[in-house]
Image (cartoon, rainbow, N blue to C red; front, side, top):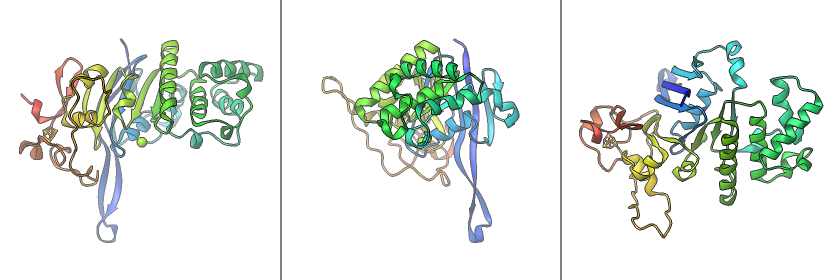
Length: 323
Ligand code: SF4
Ligand code: MG
């Protein structure tokens, strides 16, 4: 299938003043050389603990901020360095849904106003046309006609997220950044929203980058999954491959933390990682995971492991797989 998005050696550094009278200059390497591709109509799951840089990757791609270096090919055009004037035509094609719909929905606007806003920015439909489009969208996200003139505070968290999704869909995007869209919802509602996003993808062919801190949240929706640690992707595989054959010690630890059904015969052994995630201002030499890795060797402190394709579509950055 065709590639929609290709991210190459993406870096996002934030300058930080350090030292006596803040005379020093250091960089917080939030994203430190990330590579991945997403095919049209597929979902790439990006997973890692908070602070690993996954949201920064997402925000870089939809150009909510400038990037330090690297390429972001969107449907063949590198948008990483495009100026705002030239970015304009891509803004409609890339939409986003964030974790907290309450923060991203203006509380003084009703559903009609909230969804018609992007419609008006990207076109000039009549009121009648807007209403038809919005009623179709409400139906698509499982809301009702009589929700049209209600305000965000009148909805549950799950319903508010449905409004955010309808808003993102209103301009018929090719790509939606889903940054932890279900993390704040009740467990019972999470699966409903995931199912709805999958139905929408099947109907419209939209492509998702789906960000989560927990592997269990991305398993079913993702075609491929990337695991991030301290600004790098350490492993990429298809969803099934990653769950059945995790290779990177960090992926193995993340997976071991997911509760499994009692019926499962061979249970994963729980891997408890030592220590905390180091500061991205002071990340370890060589493999950044080495201070917590149960398999660390002497080479791990000296040489940065490069991404190796161990099988078609399964890549891992770890010296255990050097040959
Ligand atoms: Fe562990 Fe070394 Fe592999 Fe890093 S490169 S994950 S420290 S074994
Ligand atoms: Mg985040």
